[in-house]
Length: 417
Image 1 (cartoon, one colour):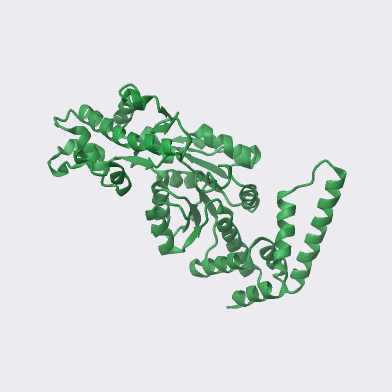
Image 2: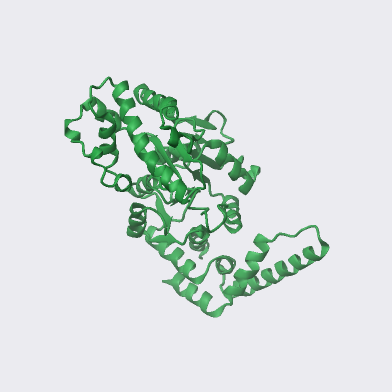
């Protein structure tokens, strides 16, 4: 109970709000070339250090750490961090982060990762915490905004790994032959053949009115259709909803061809199979073509469907993915490359693919999970049933501060006499 008592005292007796304001200014508004600006920044930094010193004097031995807690965490964040540390008796030692609609959120942050989030990630890096960026995007896209946001020195430091295309590959600069692992190369050739055929046919066989409204994302392995419209717009929602049906139909025809299965309605069988997902089923609504008795479908056809999946992201994308290569498999490979033998990860995400990572971590007691409040219902159910780390859209920094606080609290235990 001592740490709880100390936190109560810290936030009751100290002007932590002003301290945090000074810390945020120093962190996010570095000195510029202007002599006047440099002088003002220096004065504020000096005031910050003086206020931290006042806090530190009130807590023998551990004062500097309490000053850092006060300067970086709100009262609620500090107590949440202590609750997590008390519950798990471990601090976060690796970050596993989805990007789109998690670190950045369209409509809240202009679809850019906020500056305070980026700065806090650099703080984790300087504290020796590896970062795993885990996304469905292509490697080139992820490398671009990661280097732009964090800088090439951090990305190339050997402690940052990128799991791209939802686990098809892992890119970890600075690790020699392990820098790039192409996990899809180890898949069964029969599954690879299905992906190759779908990729080859997906645009050429698309209905003319639909083909002109979508484009194929430049993936290494996944087959991803994106709308030729603003993500999240009514038009994009309409296009992707149509794309779900089309992609399921094409997969059914391809699998029947590749497995040489005699099936009267392969497209309808595929719709029925993937329509077991409530979100996809809702798109199909009352479409009677999805009511196929799957028990009557040949086993060879179903064997392939059981190893692949259709990812549906409303108004954003629809894609064919491998269930044997998901984000969890990519994260496991990234942790291996980073040589993290005993991870306790903060996993942040919003979609079904992120949920698999959260479940993988939970099964191994290897971390905690957090999600934005607009995440899928299954993700929110998982997060709320564990540590309830749900944050407002565009405010991923709040949970990152909690994780950072858990490390400061762990340091308090290490420094006690």
